[in-house]
Image (cartoon, rainbow, N blue to C red; front, side, top):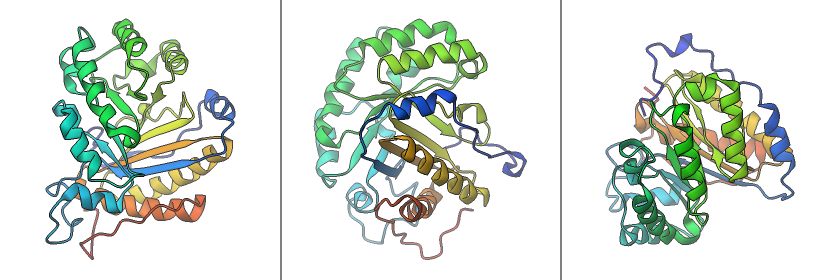
Length: 295
């Protein structure tokens, strides 16, 4: 993923910000003692994940699902899936696997949240066929979708099918620059059980807002193919440990890279750290390439 890419990552301060004050309050409200962790990549195709699949792998998703317990499903952003396609994906994965489909770009980028009832209905109808393997859908707003159109976002959220859990990624800088606008939007998310996506990428540190709106966190981590990637993941382990202690119930973490073939390598490192520091029991992905590198 190229979003937030910078020429020289060494010039960026990758320190995780302090939590927003409301985050601790949100987590404290959760009375459940359960903790569920899902870590995955954004894609499963062999072209992007070179060195991940063993030679002779016949079905990439089937193999991917033996190594990871989730996928950030970007394929649904570019093409609205049919119910049959969703069922095919579902049936290739084990019972505890979760899909996190991105809402089609017809909704977010082309119609820009206007006149979308038909597409939203089709999308929701299709992804509900994931059954218990549906994690949550997520809406990624266009980079130039600004707060001046916040009424569209509010209408979208209020009309969203409640059977499908939803996360939203705000991208335009204006959502984060104005504290009043940001707080009003977060209140909207809280009132409608919308998970606020956190993006950790070099060139957009404002999207690392550390403001949770539900007892779930959905994090899109974009590595820089740099040695700092490991230190950043170490910091995330410590933050998730804290959030778990404070009441976090669901942890969704998806690893992207400017060079995507390195995503499984970083994911394996991160999962091993989670297992050691937090006590999760996630499978550590195996890499077909015995000498993988970030570069």
